[in-house]
Image 1 (tube, helix red, strand yellow):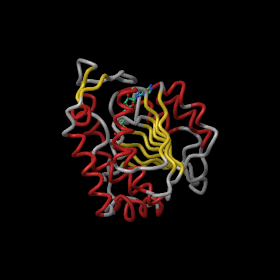
Image 2: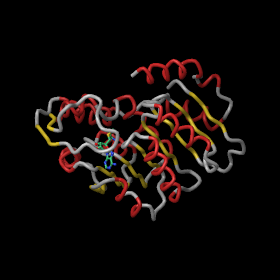
Image 3: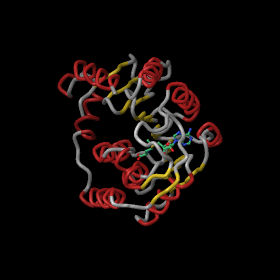
Length: 258
Ligand SMILES: C[S@@+](CC[C@H](N)C(=O)[O-])C[C@H]1O[C@@H](n2cnc3c(N)ncnc32)[C@H](O)[C@@H]1O
């Protein structure tokens, strides 16, 4: 917790707004995507999905993968408690929808399904998406599958198992966008990043969640920013957004309040 507070103050100190940005690519991204709004019908679906989760009293057995939980003591958890303590915020879910629209991302990979709020957002962003989403916990995945079916989301490929085994066989296609939102630890984050580099094209976008969650995640973010294939990054505190555009001659890193 102390680490996060310290990181937040450091973020606030460095963060700028669109008025401090000189890159036309980033300025346009802020103006036309970050500052935009999602459609009313998408907002309604997102609100209904998250409302239903927040009232879901069903108990499930959770296999704790990755960095584990700082909140739960037991593996038997109510769906509503999982929703209230983990997963994407409504603000970031809306931003995810806008990013998918802005970049017209179609082939998408999500590493960490949980209850499917991120998956829903990815699918709302573009009606023609093909989404592959990875989850290690069987009962959590079943909840996400049931909800996403109930909300009539199509073209979602659910993959069950430890990312350490499930990720590699999925990397023989090019992804327009990869959302890294599971196993928030330094070494696995770097490992998944390195593996996913095989799949990039010039316009691919990687989004890393919780880049300042811990010292290890901060170090993973530094590693990613400094990688030779990465040409531009945006730090929004909760997310690290990564681009590989070759037309970006000089590497640039932005710290932005969004
Ligand atoms: C933060 S949650 C994902 C949140 C989701 N993307 C959203 O937007 O609501 C991370 C999920 O990744 C899963 N996970 C973490 N480490 C994993 C691993 N090594 N293999 C498989 N699943 C893992 C956890 O079970 C958890 O459900």
